[in-house]
Image (cartoon, rainbow, N blue to C red; front, side, top):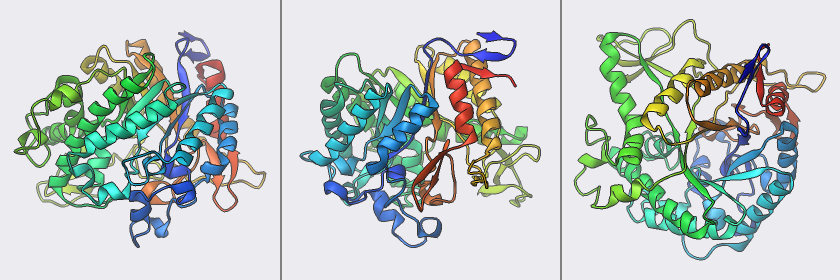
Length: 460
């Protein structure tokens, strides 16, 4: 797989880039689209950076041909994007809004004409507000409602879309949206969070069945999880690291792969310990066979114990005596996230053992930096180039060590609306001037295109 000057990836390795509907589409009220929880949340003062919203974002609803042109410049074999649920079902249920479906028809056809495979995520956080008004992911009925949406999508696009992801990062949906309240819908209720955790998994299982029933037999269906690498900074913090691992990783991998929640979790994090939440037959649905597991990874976490409850420099309290630690010798991105590619290798090899027969895709990986346009009109984001190089090298080593990794999607194709961070944080391989919507390929985009063309990572 390697030569003296490059690391070659397996033949057929799928290279792509990823986006999400609310982050790029704009057109917040176009063609019958209903409001999502992010439309509502982002308009509440103080919820996002400078009160910024996704009303316009990258205007990809109108400018998707420009985005496809950028994908072609990257040489991407696939484009992972999500469907806006309220664009297709304005109230989250009932008959489809045809203009909304027509948009995704045009997008899929244009991708295929450009030789790019569409990889569709059904849900990337933009729940119809009408469903949140009835309880959102905390209500059990939403699993069947979501399956109906999956069936509509499968029937409309399944003749051309052959890879589907049911959910993107259910941990963020449940625990950042319903426990911490930092994301839409802005709820701070542990009981709703743990209910949402279970109902998301139940919705995934039902959606798998709906997609298989409405799509050709060749369709592949999976789920995308943001799995964590949590490292203890001392023996005293080992139990804390194991607890956090169970809360973020085990609470999804356990039900999906083994039909059980981690025993160590309390009722505030384990659906299995909440009376009446888990019904007979639920795990039979949740463990519906999937064709691949999507993995989103950005940075590891280091945790420590401070008996005096006083965080030291670079630490953040996460409990009465618990802290997140930033090792002094480790760089951080503009998101203040650590940069350590060895953690991605660690995660991949862990999944080789936990899910030995399940093909993997890295469905998001990237970094935010302080990008700017130089006087000659270029974006020299060498930090992102270094990040990409190191993380792709880690993945190459994981493949060499037996990990069944089938593809990689860079996050993100475009600078976009970065949720609560508004437009302050840029992850794109393509720079977007949000005032003019001009798109400029960054140095990192040129680097990524060279990797894709060669199906190999240069060593220098």
